[in-house]
Length: 335
Image 1 (cartoon, rainbow, N blue to C red):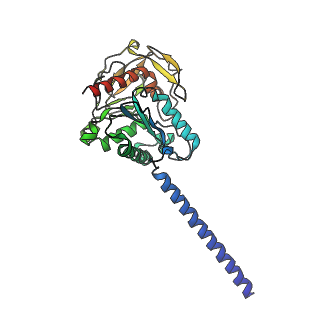
Image 2 (image 1 turned 180 degrees about the horizontal axis):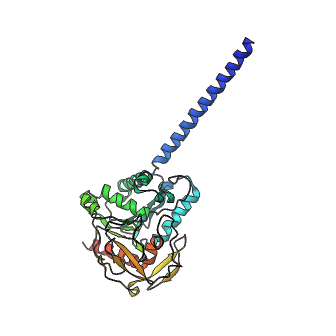
Image 3 (image 1 turned 45 degrees about the vertical axis):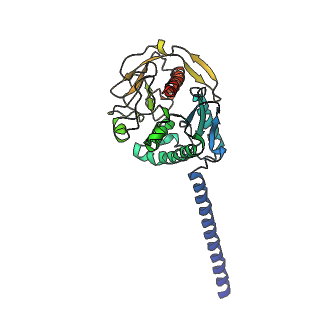
């Protein structure tokens, strides 16, 4: 009886030890996997959606993708092939604005998931910090290994635009690097006077011609009064890409060079000249769009209000933005 109990005890101890070892090994593998994903290796081409595309161009574009990840994780894993395909498709949809003038770089990064934006600004920040950690590492690697003093355009839409503004805050207080900055196209996001007071290198665009500036706007219909992109009660810097003014002057559809809608490969599937007009609501710093059918161009983002036209920000002004990129590069080079 004693031997039987002793044998049972030995078996139980072995099982407990095996479970413990398995737990430790599993934890070790998970921790190491997390460390590998924590900062992607940007010396590897696999960590870039675009890498040095357009070697014959004189200006570099560092392009940051918008939110495409809608999965169950809080941040996108760079091991998810379907998410990476969506990521590249989103970049392709806006690349035509820049690619005629720029050599293009666009890093993959562990962007925050779409549902993150249903959280308040404090709670969502931990996930955006993970996204920015990757962006910062990618930009640092690009500066050290690829830039070689060339002029730079930063560009992004939505979450990508937010990441652009974070780069300006962290990197462009350096006078020499700021001197390389043609412009920042931070489309579909916002910044305000408090940001500028804290970070003097954040210079809002005031015309079609200035350089070293931030082009920033978000689009809505007239009834919208609040959004997480441009919260109520604050005035955000905004420029109208139809007339390149920062006041409330109305710009008619005749000033719209063409809205463009593209497929996942970047091909323009529909182009509509003189598509819409708009004016800046100077109390909030957003563009109020006029002359569109809101049943066709409705808001698909649950965390944004009805009447938000955020997903169309660059599409509605595609040709105006394309012409402006060329113009600002020429103005920069003429200096």
